Length: 255
Image 1 (spheres, rainbow, N blue to C red):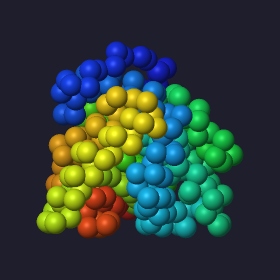
Image 2 (image 1 turned 180 degrees about the horizontal axis):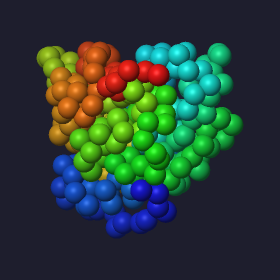
Image 3 (image 1 turned 90 degrees about the vertical axis):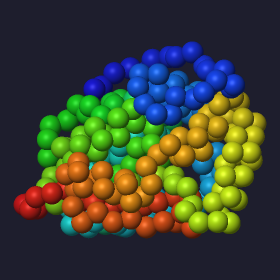
Image 4 (image 1 turned 180 degrees about the vertical axis):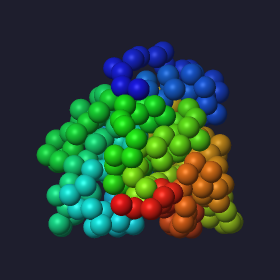
């Protein structure tokens, strides 16, 4: 559903973060990303050691856009539209990219990245688009923030053409030690400090690791993608499992 940015009161750092869903989570996510928008891209590069750009490029390669280089694609939970910008700069790509996000400030900061980007203020669980109109969809670190993950996956399937692909890059927790312990130490103690210093937001970068801990594992996310209407679902883990890339194909025969 397309709508303007709303404000919500900042939560106290000592209170429990609303990571599991409901209207409180939606309000917090919207307020938080609106507040950190000016430093969002810079912090992504810093906390991921610039690996976020590499992982996005891999996801774009797996999108299969070459089958419809003049098609229409959607960057869901687009933020500052990094994903869409990377796709738009691929050699031979001549299509259009919609960047959908319910935080207008993020979209406004990203719209200059490419003339092929069309920002649309919209919630990923209720998109203002007809069914089966996109040739591919991508989500970068966004499904974890949805109030209803399953509804978001179903909605992504709805707007995709049969045979079109969805690629999701999302945080994960490494399954094995010692990397799991090192990840927890970095994400729970180092990352929040860096985030607070640069973004000036008290809880945004405590939210990130906390929400990752409550998010489904890569095998569980793959299963839920299948239930939402995707087939040939697969995933790969990056850097021992700190991030995972999922790829699924919308059920049905491509025209």
